[in-house]
Length: 317
Ligand code: RBF
Ligand code: MG
Image (cartoon, rainbow, N blue to C red; front, side, top):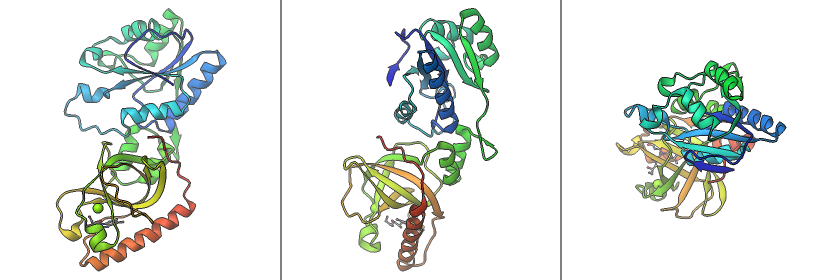
């Protein structure tokens, strides 16, 4: 996939374009990309995704608490996996936000990106004050000679799929639902940092403590996870704890993972945690012994889950 960071004139003449933030690259987005690729192939054209960095909300509303599902680099890799030919990553600035919807279409989509067909979701809005919508696109399509397809909302189990619903599911610890909507396991990437060292010395369950790069960390609690270690090119099974270790009276949140049947020291290494299933809330135990027993049970539960689990992982890092 060709990635263009900025607005440039494209070589390809026959382009099939979709525009959006595509945070998470969830199943709904994947359906749009599938349709876009199909249309482009039928006409010997190129499929083009236009997206933005940073996310417009972060630029327009500085204090907005929006947390993103995917980092921009993850998003690009996921879009590439969907078979898209070109992604145009537009730097979103306050100045860019001033462009009127009709000028965005004419100056960028038509004149720079050679739009032959534009495909958007049913509720897509764009341009200054979000004044552009599907009806405006259809009118401008007649003027500039491009076709427009508006895709319906994508539903799964009666629920409309959206990046917002996935963010909420993750924050509520509803990993199953988030993963179902994403079409893969939600993951966080990070670096292994120094922990308290209690895991190996007191508990017999050493943990790698993680400093995460992603913005959304699932709700506190214990999870069955898979762990990818890029330096080894391998993926392992594990159990993760996100929380404050109330048994030890910590006040700071920590994110840690115990990798099954693994002993290597990972300090300073990159790590990816794929969340498969939530096992329980974090608890304050009255003794270290009780915590140890509980972790042993967590591991048994996780192993059972792994036996039948078919959740796809997104492995490239
Ligand atoms: N700490 C707690 O205080 N309460 C818990 O319920 C708890 N559950 C855990 C479950 C797993 C699978 C793991 C790996 C750790 C858990 N911990 C829990 C964290 C434990 O206190 C921590 O690993 C050590 O204190 C080392 O930092
Ligand atoms: Mg540790």
